[in-house]
Amino acid sequence: MKSFDAPALVVSDNSENITDLLINRAAKTPELPLYGVDQHDGTWKTVTAAEFLADVESVAKGLIASGIQPGQAVAIMSRTRYEWSLVDFAIWFAGAVTVPIYETSAPSQMEWILSDSDSVALFVENQEHLDRFEQIKASAPMVRSVWTFDGDSLEQLRRLGKETSAETLEMRRNSAGLYDLATIIYTSGTTGRPKGCELTHRGFVELSKNATIDIPEVLIEGHSTLLFLPLAHVFARFINVLCVHAGIKVGHQPDSKNVGPAMVSFKPHFLLAVPRVFEKVYNSAEQKAEAGGKGKIFRKAAYTAIAYSKALDTPEGPSLGLKIQHKLFDVLVYKKIRAAMGGLVKFAISGGAPLGARLGHFYRAIGLIVLEGYGLTETTAPAMITRPAKVKIGKVGQLLPGTGIKIADDGEIWLRGNNILRGYWRNPEATAAAMDGEWFKTGDIGELDDEGFLTITGRKKELIVTAGGKNVAPAALEDPLRANPLIGQAVVVGDQKPFVSALISLDAEMLPIWLANNGGDKTMSLADAAKSPLVLAEVQRAVDRVNKNFSKAESIRKFVVIGSELTEETGHLTPSLKIKREIVMRDYSPIVEEMYDSNPATGENGIN
Image (cartoon, rainbow, N blue to C red; front, side, top):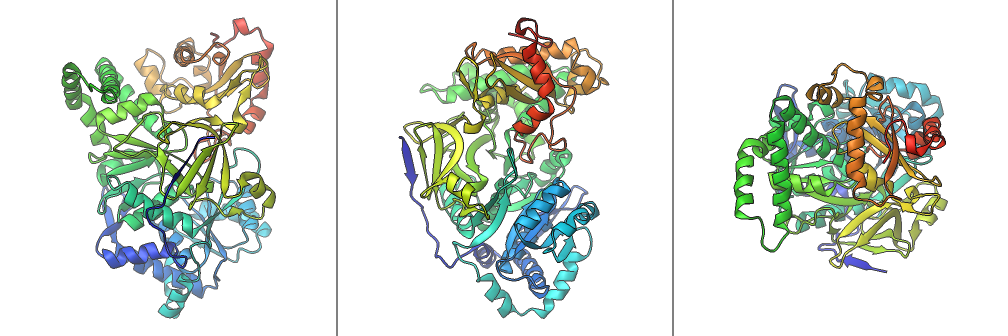
């Protein structure tokens, strides 16, 4: 059983909590910008550390005056925006516990989280969220106060808080210690009802302090990052806290369609994203070049970039000819991609799923090193991350200080350390099942090399065992399929079946662009495209390319392109874009059964 431990570089006093990170930051650099607030005209209003602290204290006093007690749960349901960060810290300053709710959550999901967590108050973004709450408020009777970001609720709290003394606020701020509950984050729920992960102040505080020391090349005081992932997700939430500690300015952009212009105007130094975002950037650049008659140049540039990056990992390095080509394409292609991301981006942190070697090499060669990380909600986000000085593309890095890892006999990844959840809220059975002493059993399957670099090979519960007894990890097939610009999602099936198949949805955003570039009708609907010989041939080529890396027993023998998207809105993806396999299989079971009922040698949409 291979295992590694990384000793903590710094250990906090048990009396500390997350609020101390902001107090210390404001004391050290009061005039340093901590936030940039989008003015929706291409400019950003700066909020300094001192201004943010004053705003947090003002709202926290209002929460205290409104009756919020230490340890009580207060929920936030909103898109990623400045007010989310403000209220999160204000809740902690009031001695309370934050409960995030995804802004896309259905009323039934709101009902479960609010009632299960005993939330006594709720912040929502707008009237539409308020209307959703109205549908279920009878089932969440403990929620006695509801405040709205789009309105004067925050200003009312600030006015109300003028009655609260600084001494009362300080007492409340210090009411929680390192091992006390900071937040209850409900899992995305790929299977079953979401479980509430009890995360302590320790996880955020210790990880922030140790990461800042451990990755100084990325976490530079005075630099900036643009957050566009949901702050309800632990990944973005931790980065937000980390940036307060490190003195990094954060901008918020909730609308995925505006991320491009926001990067140009905000000019971040590093980014936080899931692999799907990096795939989209690459595919958009490729299709834009194709539309402009420069597709051949882009493909040659991409080939050169990947070859150049791979050569960096060899003892001799890139050849002179490769260096010259790389420099040429930097002028023609690479610098334009960097400019589209603001021009200053040098690093990106990727998590949630494997990025894939092709994109890892491509981005490194164009001047953007993607640092792959690994963690879960239960580990306060990161447990492992790649270091800029030691990149192994295709692996998710090494342990952060203060954490440990081992691979169990069945290949499951177990983690321990300063970032592990306290337990599942009101669910001792789930806690007992997930913990073995201080070790948290992740449910993921992986491998460690001799230097402690981790490779994720699949999800334990998602492993497919074919009728022939072959174990297949769906993600290994699905992730490279999604690299194709036409493919939105891929869901590999085949458990207890004679061969492996896939359900494939098209990318509605990329479809018209691809059709226009390939002689198709760009007005074609998703339903019509799913039957189009032109589209099916391209999907078949994508499947063939992926299958080259697998044995016949592991490869996709048949696929069906469905005529609709698989999205969070349809209920088939979690907010962090993970596939809800049980829901997909339920909704598309007739199609799946038809794939296996028909002759596998004459499948409708493609067979290998």
